[in-house]
Image (cartoon, rainbow, N blue to C red; front, top):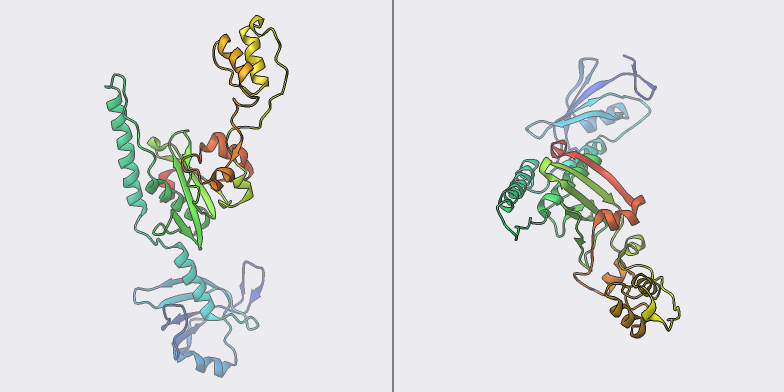
Length: 337
């Protein structure tokens, strides 16, 4: 029977094989016996694979279309391409399947269903706080931060949906995938996010939970490590100094308030205060004393200033490394099921 493959190559025929003895790593156990069915006729029944190879001189099976394991641990392979000239090791086909199966498998205990329970519980707390705050007079109840166990597992399922590889939550840090340490930052407000000065990662992901009440989330992927120069050069606070060593006029008292403020701005002084305060600043404070120096992520991390590494995602981080931010998920949580 002639079979034309998707690659527009004509192969001689197709047949099916049933492998009876495959070990845990996908290798044929020594002395394995197989059935070979060709054109609906069993040409080898329960025969040692070595005997077939020795008798035929070759055993040529190309790419397997589908592999699945039965309950007893045996597997069935349907061959869709067959060629007398192209030899492919049967074991390698099975090993590739087992490797792919391992990469796709859930390795920790946080299933999608348990993640959804966590989200529902968190959203219920938000609703309760809203209800209580309507009854408060002045002081309000603060919402808790978006829970790390939720953001980390939303990122986990988003990565799986995007790449077909399931990261592991049972690890030191947030997530691990293919020996890569993944850092996850989640937020449900536009406030600053905190970073540890010695926090290491290969890739970092940001989970936007601004619409968590509707169970809508966004996941951004940034393939920059904490030691990347691009990441370290993100400006966290301050700005470039832009002041002048301009002369102070003798008639400060005769200047208007707005003119004093402009003069303070040019000399890098704080521009708040009364006319008398501004005149005092101009006479006694050093040029640039009212400006905060520009500090990058690397500057603060190297100084180990815990608590100073804080910046909002959209207003600071994303604006500076826009080209490295990749949106890998944007939708309802049930799209990650």
